[in-house]
Image (cartoon, rainbow, N blue to C red; front, side):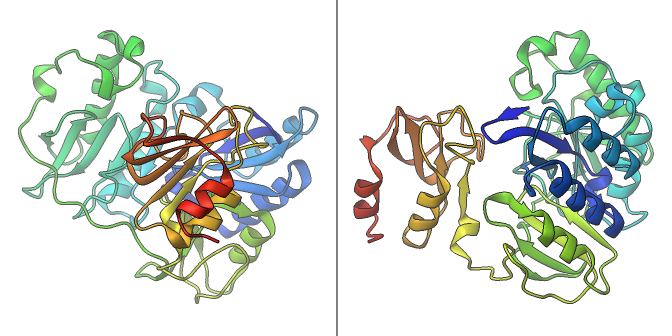
Amino acid sequence: MMAGDGLLVRVKPRLGRLTPAQAVGLGEAAVAHGSGSLDVTRRANLQIRGVTEAAWPDLLDRLLALGLVDADGGREGRRNILVSPDWKPGDDTHRIAAALHDRLGELPALPGKVGFVIDAGAEPALSAESGDFRIERGSEGVLLLRAEGRAVGVPLGHGAEVEALIDLAHWFAKSGGAAAGRMGRHAAPLPDWARGSVQPAQPKAAPAPGQRELGTAYGLPFGRLKAPTLIQLAQTPGITGIRTTPWRILLTEGGMPGQLDGLSLDPNEPLLRVDACPGMPECPQSSVETRMLARRLAPHVVGRLHVSGCAKGCAHSGVADVVLTGRRGAYDLSLGQRAGAPPLRAGLDIDSLIAHFGAV
């Protein structure tokens, strides 16, 4: 995809995990063929920024050699799987996600943003994250198949999960789901076999920066990661892998925590309560600067702040306590809304916002 700073090349790590060798290779490729900056997305993918038209074929070859891209374009397009990042080898999340990867060729053609969520731990971790077809733990301890937009799901027997996901995807395609675009907007009644009455289990909170059971959680303001930092992290003694998350958090497997450029170990870091898209000039859709303003305002905003360069709200699709939406070179202010909502105050400039929030 073309952005204001060049092409974005998206990488979808299998099971949301990079080996140290893959992380080093990815960082080196981002420096050699891009700007040296990467984004961690809300789908726990990575985007290499600043790639030129001339550079991307060589970059693709390097990603293929690292095992970060599927050589089959059809399979790569279907590989939209968000996995709970605290999985352990052999547990239900790992088992189901790995089996779904192996059967991607059985899926029908689906709209580009349609994806799967595998969240089979004792407490769901991804309940607030977008996904069309979900496997998650139910309130009674069983595993559920749940379609996005439906509050309840149907229990499944052990080993039946991937078959049910594939069947539901085929039903979605045959019942006109492509016209709706996403499962949550598809009004067709679910087939009888996919209807249930079991509530999902109570979710757990997303991890905060600091030491965790798996290793160390590093906060990533705005989801932006410098390639040299990724390389340095991957080469830290004791680290056996790096896992991506949809919360702008990187999780290491093992290793001792240490401060690295651009990564935060402070759970109270104000920038971790901020969502801000790249803004102008990196995004041609934006008419305003976003991240410098967000840095200025973050310590002065109570709750979650969302600064969006336009009404699309790419950085955060949900409600935030304070929302600034760019429009025609100025900012609209909303409270408790999504980006693009009718503003409380419209057409504000940066000086007005700094004064309003006492950020002088």
